[in-house]
Image 1 (cartoon, protein in one colour):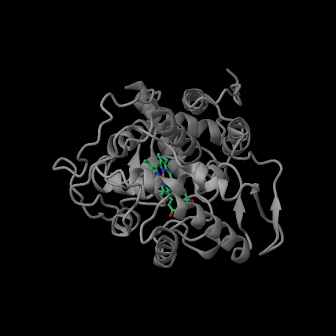
Image 2 (tube, protein in one colour):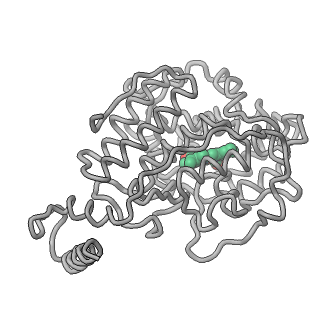
Image 3 (cartoon, protein in one colour):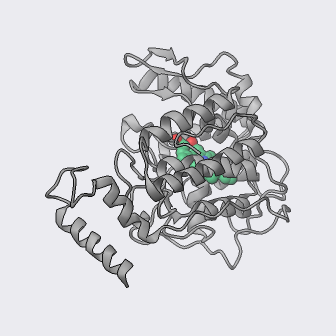
Length: 376
Ligand code: HEM
């Protein structure tokens, strides 16, 4: 009773003062941050640990009667990742596209057989920069009030569409952020994927096509996007995602390694499993990525420093062979940049999620020293 009264008073105070006071101004002895933390603490439940690997990793029907495709409802979130979009449209994730880290790890394992440590790493990386640590919810698309009250700025809690947290340039079927829409399916870019599949894959998307297309897309962005950037963490996802369609979008009963382009469109554009689709057999992550990187052995992370065609190496970025630099920079720059001085339950939630992120790097075999940006 007392707790809810106190909370109600805080909420009323907040509602009344939100537009009258600039951010961080003292309110009845509380700073804005303390007030936000106090209000947010109402619903705070320490986030549970992620699930382990699937016990049964066999190929199986995933477009089943329990997971029918349903079209989007107003307000549902979809974003740059064709796999997460599909999982939401089939109910492996909440259909509104707002999910917890545990739901995300469970869904990518169950629906696609993504390997456990890789799934955890992807999910906690993106969650820490794009999700709400207090409510434990993240949008797989745009910013939405469905993730609850935001923690104090500069945190954004703006979903996977957020440019340069994990989403980035040089995608296969989404335009670079500079050109406007960085998250919706783009037919022109898909037609380019088709063109490369015809030229290098006899009409199918395979590892050879993935390598040629990745090289082309990087060169294309250097030549046409004055704000092009390809540094860690996006560097890692750009190369891994090139092989994901081969590893996960081919039916689990088909071992040819050749992705049919109608099936590709089903995921990339329509956000649906093809009829009767089986997930792959056996959990994997980015197998085949070496074929892609071997075509560009001298590529180094960097950005267009002074407009198009001014690609400049960024020596501060991790390279593809420096997973621990990636981890340190991500924690100390990306996460700390959004949460410079967290307090209370916000700090507690960040520390728990940072622990889950670190455990994923250890499980993936990266022998990095743990960093504690907010103390132990
Ligand atoms: C088996 C699981 C997954 C598959 C097959 C997959 C596949 C893909 C592919 C192919 C793209 C590139 C789209 C394009 O370039 O047009 C992509 C983008 C993306 N995915 Fe996933 N993904 C998976 C899991 C995840 C997870 C677990 C997360 C995070 C929770 C995630 C977050 C993203 C983001 C942020 C992008 C945007 C990158 C960009 O284009 O800038 N994905 N995904």
